[in-house]
Structure formats: C-alpha cells, structure tokens
Length: 447
Image 1 (cartoon, rainbow, N blue to C red):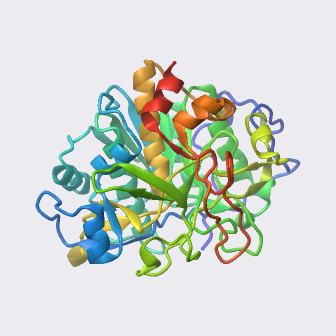
Image 2 (cartoon, one colour):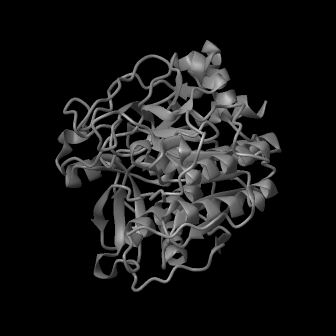
C-alpha cells in the first residue's frame, strides 16, 4: 500500500532553510537535480525474544545465570551503566530527550512504570505528543494495514532505555500516525521547530537501495533539511545503523537512512561482554551469522547483524573523510551493545497473555542510549553540545583522548547474506569510532 503524499506541516523556510537546491557544510547530496515524491517506508522491528511472563522478584538473574538458563545474557540498567562507565553523579536532570516513533504503544506509560519499579528507577516526566493526531489502533497489537506492533515494541525499547541511562531527564515521545516518510518528517519537524529538547533519537530506517530516486527523493531531501536545521539549532540527532548487515537484504552494500545523513550520528552494533558485576570485558562486531562472533553458540538462532556501509546518496562530510578515506559518507559513526545474546531487558504490556519482559537487541538499542548519554553530557557542560559528529571525529585524531573516551572494537565483520566490511583499528564501518567510555567522553565533550 502506498500512502498519498502530503507536504510538511510548515514550509521549510520556517526552519530557517531557504532552499533545497544547495547543500553545503557537513556533506552534499549526490543527486539533487530533480525530485520524486515516492514515499519512503521506514521500518522498526528490533530483534527480541520472550524472557519472563512477569518480573522476577528483585530481578535475581545475573548475566551468567541467564546464559545458563536461556543461552542469552540479560543486562539490567545498572549493569549497562557500570560496563560503559556512566557516572552516577549525572542523571540528565534539566534535560529533555526527544524520541520519534510511528504508531507508538498503547501501554507505554504502564510499561515504563513496570520497568522502573523492577529496576529501582524513578518515574520520569513522559510527554506523549501527536503532531498529526493519535493513530487509530484497531486493537492492542496494531492498526489496519500496518506493522504497528513492531513499532510499539520499538517505542518501549526507546523510552525505557533512554530513561535507564538518564533517569532524571524528561522524555518527549513524538508519535507519527504512520511509518511513511511524510508522517515521520512531520513528527521530526515538529520536534525541531519547537525545540522540544537538545537531543533526538530515531530508531528506524530505510535502506538507501529501497528509496526511489535516491538523492532526488523529496521526502529524503525534506528529512535532510530537518536534520540540518537541528544542527543549526544545537540539537544532537541519533539514528540506528540497521540490523541486517552491510547489505540490508540487497545484493550490494548500502547504508540505512536517516543514519546515513551527514547531520545525524549513526549508531552501529556490538556484542558487549561483561562480568556479573557489570565490569566491562570487551566487544566484538554484532553478527549472528558468523560462528566466530555469535555469543554463547547462538542457541536461539540468528537475529541479525549490525549495519554499516557507504552511502550512495551523500558525499563524505569534511569531518569524516580523513578518518575513512571514502569519497562518500559512511555509517556507522559510533557503536553500542546490540546483540540479542547480550540483551537488555524491556517490558512489553500490550501483548495480552504474552506480556512480560523480553530480551532485546538491535542497533535501535544504541540510538536512544547515545541520546541519553548526550543529555548527561549536556547537563555536565551546562549547555547543549549540539551536532556531535565533528567533535567525535576530532577526538579520534587525538590518540590519548581516543584511547580514554572510546572502546575501539577491532574484531568482526558485518557481512549478513551479502557483502560486508571488517572491523579494525580506529574507524571502521561496522562500529564507527567504537563504543563509549561515558565518564571520560563526557569529561572531554564538556570541557
């Protein structure tokens, strides 16, 4: 089904953008001579598997006990915060994290309350905003002709885990009525033009190979204009790099959009290993199809692999070209835990008898957590850090800062049913610059 095209809620000039004909600064569109209005259809269906029908008392399972019982490690907010060295002195107080999703979840408030009660977190201020009206859900699982159930699962992951990393921050959940590009563009534009917060997370994407017209696509151009406006207005924007390897189901490697946009920080995925007390032990590229990478012998099967590939739409931005040696923009920029086998716990309350805690993974786990980490950095700095990519790549050029601020992930590759790319020292496409040592990175960013 193809949605009918309609324009953005406000003219682009209202965002301070005079024209779509010229692209300068971070990167340029490879094709911008003429446009097509063919809709982009975004997907969000993070890989997950059922865990517990209800929360075990005080959540007694350690990661190793979960591996023994289920073949999957289970990580709590406290353990993830320890592994990535998130400072307990920062909570995100005074900050707002904006999360953009389609359809939303009918039980997100109750799900977040259950999540918080289980892990001893304070309930945050959660604002749910519908710029184009509330979606008409036919039942608790979805709406007619839609993949709304997958988006509801994504919504729970995004909200619960951005809150887990920044428990003192306000969350503004901005919900589009469909997953078409025009609807999500309107939701993003609303968030940016009203400056709801200084950080914004988008855990969804479309393979560039699936976008009709590539750089000529009007919805892609409109989205790019929104992200440029966000950068101009001091808003940090994050997107997931994808869960289907470098090729996203196609014969050729291709990046996921909007992660490939030069004004967005793209988050790739890893397998994160830790001790039961949360001590960081190491990371490899997330790729369940590679027996040398799949944690704990992949007893539950293959869930996916991190994205990360060159863009066919955007030229390499100046902040990235030296690090990658590529003529085109490449994803990812940074990385974070993403394997279902090194799972975070998410509560879903809209699945009737199947409601409960689930083991979750996917690069859409990393985007909201990187947004939350940036909210902590904004709190530490006392102001918005804004568009982060130039500063992150600048850190990578300083060996001392880079070694302190990032875990350089050097093992693995992201070929998943098609071509892929290998990790290595420094920047690589599966994991970007690496995963954060949060305390050190915040100190560097806030200087």
